[in-house]
Figure 1 (tube, rainbow, N blue to C red):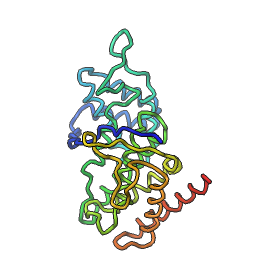
Figure 2: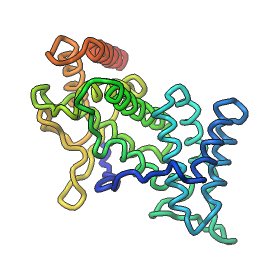
Figure 3: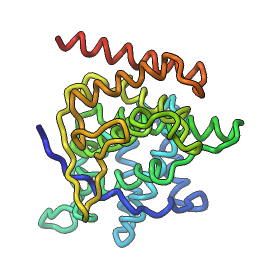
Figure 4: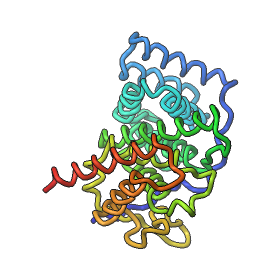
Length: 286
């Protein structure tokens, strides 16, 4: 069993507005070239790295702009997620930026640029922190749900690269599984609708199911670091991943698919498919 320290993802302020920033526009231009197949993910990564490093005194701000650009692109344009994941992976594989002639690496918040992709996880955390589903059905609600599902799928894609820079993203998977599958439907707040969390949880199974089945990991917890791996009302076991918790999730997907009141037929179908995939994964592992 691996014991993991919970990354410092808590008490994050709301995402800053970036739409009026010229640097944001330059990053969008890089992605447009990528989408049009005028550049490769590697070339896009190098271009984004150059933009981010252009003003060393404001490096942390420029990294935030780069991460935000990529996250928003992935959640708004899911058809480009494979390319965007390749861009982030290429960034993580770039030689570390050097701050002097001696070759000392550039460090931001105790993380190396580029191997650790400093503050990327913090920016992803904005997508979970304070997430609420609009109460009234309509286009805004549908778009909010779609963005959340897309963000979860993108995070799972990044974890599927097995690069160390994305290893802490397992906590995002756990948060989504907990919200979707560890709270009885009657206790789910209206603004935390399972219409969002069940498809988001299913996305993790779809992209990363076999790996999640093998995870045996517990997150550290305590008064000073919080308890990111704690279970919902239906789970009182390990503060992390294990086969028993996987089993609960599979059973809950099945229960939701079986007709719990308040869920749409589309969500029930997603839950049913996720349960079937989990069973297939278990059978393949025998």
